[in-house]
Length: 115
Image 1 (cartoon, rainbow, N blue to C red):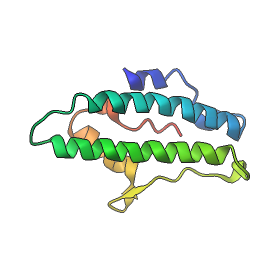
Image 2: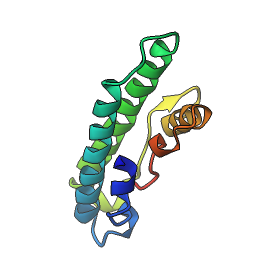
Image 3: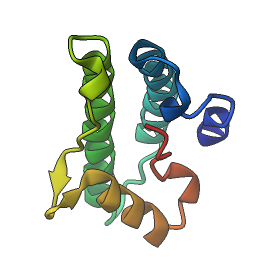
Image 4: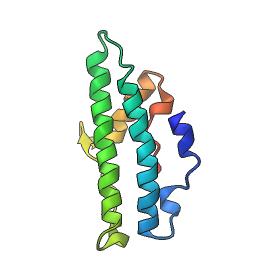
């Protein structure tokens, strides 16, 4: 349900100004935070617990990356800012997050790619 909410927002890159883009990123990131908080309450207590918790922690890093980018969009040189993600296994963390989501058929938990 959370990912569906993101469709109600404009794509961040469609913003007219960096500050407007930052607002959209913060709003959509709040939805992702709610999603992750909700998922943490239903982590199974089985052999996969460790992997699910690692994935949720990685999602937390992706969320921090989004918020850091939003901060930069509100600062000096906002027009020149680019979105950089944390790296995991020599790739952007969203690659790892999305692979885990696909392997576990959690397509609605993939990163939205909206930044």
